[in-house]
Length: 502
Image (cartoon, rainbow, N blue to C red; front, side):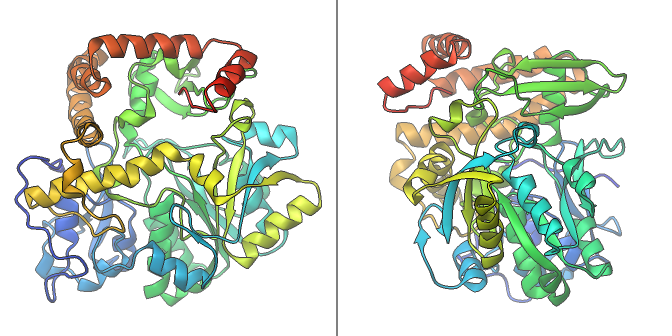
């Protein structure tokens, strides 16, 4: 069955927010988490109660748990232990607790969590580096774990069109180098862990898991309650995350470059173009009949990642940017001069002895070109994401508290005084844009016209930028900056103390 969800109403939800760290006695909070929009669809609940729950794709292109018997989720009929594996429930430990359990005491940074070492750089093999979305280190790490016989298989995401759900990629199990290499690159839409975690339960072995912060946290929570999963998952590789997207984001990208929904087969979200710095994304789309189109994101309306189109609501209630519970985290090294190299570069954060040994071995053998970074450099490279997940989250928590709407307890305190500030208004508008984009795209699909989506969203986006004049100025500046030669961009960055333009 397909469940049509109610998107969270940010102004009129009347579900009372439980006190932090508590849940109704003997009742699961899962229905509240789902109704409030705070379910990311990771599938940990369905892994824990496989006879009762399954994951289904909603019409808005996100995953949600549903009852296998077709009945509505009912707190009184669901086992309370589900809350212990839900990363957006008060009953689940936060990233600080999980990090301490997993890695013990040690160096810690407020934005990065526990860490052993921090690096920035890329894989020495230039062709390998070019094939990855950043500097190639993510794929290199899991391949090295396979080669050294530290793991038997890798759970990661590969492109694979699912006609039934509309998904363009999903988690898969790879046991060979060729299979792992087939999953290189970024996949910017929601996933769920249910099938691969079920596979781990049923097939003895040692596994590596690659995922965004909330999914690595879900794996850790499953490992606490399920000894089999806890024993068999030997390595976790976290991805730095701005936010997830619904599958409709992929439809939007394809439609924007001329391949209508239904004709789209796959998208390369981080297509590398020689001479074009890594932070200037290009999109390459392929249709089911073999048509291929590549465009810079500056040609796609409202492509600014910070706007948050097609973002699941749960992403606005997460405070983990760098996968603090992962053995090793890899992301984009968004600081000059590395960010100006079109081939891409990684920031790498190790937390466990195994992860450290893999990275140290690669450096010693000359297969990884990495330079040490300070925690401050690593945090600065993810400045925008951290601002949204910390100062912005404090605003959103305060607003939900004011409305009496459920929000998960976070390591960030609500800040009622910030709600009416320019930053506060901007952060709440981002949330409104995200929610509205799901509805607007559904209308566009029904009308068969992408212009319907643009008309619905443009007033909100113009408001986000402040005024029509400022919006036009921003678009003009973006158009120019996406076209200036790299040496000129580098000079501009030096003149502005490294300020990011995109």
